[in-house]
Image (cartoon, rainbow, N blue to C red; front, side, top):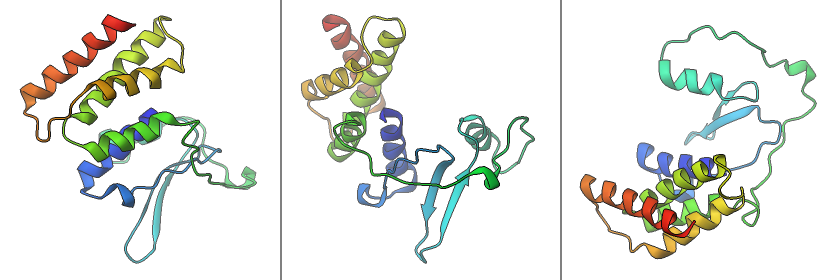
Length: 169
């Protein structure tokens, strides 16, 4: 759910919406990749097979629609589409993302950099999977957010985060 948290932060900045207007739900069948509800109540959703090839292709080539080989959704075989609220205890990464977005300024930089470094360490078998959110939380707790950081400050904060993780893990 850390990646979902990054998407929440992106939505806040790309679409200029408040965090209260971004709702994350778990869709266990993994068919719905995104949804937006308009001011009239209508909802538009992007549905597809449970992998990210189509959403990525859509993002890269929009507004063009390119052919993508592979399995298609067969709605006749889908018994139900369900939604669940994410459990904050099981999805700490999402809660940390909301915290970073709420603090704002340079805190989302720390959140992202800590996630990148922690995931790299996990992939290299240096830490366990559940350590990822511990590392993110630790780095955020050690950072005093800068309200409106410059690009240079953002790059410095990113490097500081990497070094903090290396010094401890």
